Image 1 (cartoon, rainbow, N blue to C red):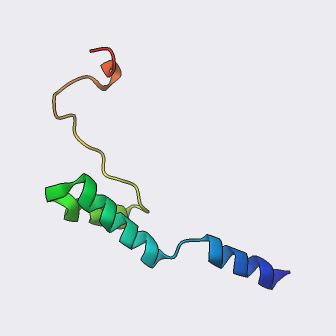
Image 2 (image 1 turned 45 degrees about the vertical axis):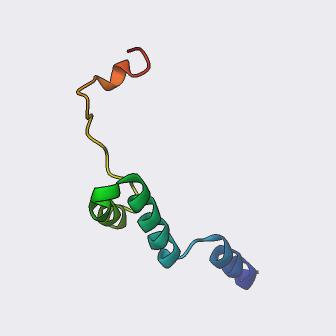
Length: 66
């Protein structure tokens, strides 16, 4: 039973190598010129994307209303 559970976890869990490749693709797609910053941030923060600054100085609470 332990062997079956261990095998299932290995199959269903992405390796860190796969995750890093996915982070790289995402960072290059979403952050064009700053992809290196975004990629490093995701590696350092378990895949958490960096927060974007509000470019137009709009209040985030008003999104969709303006």
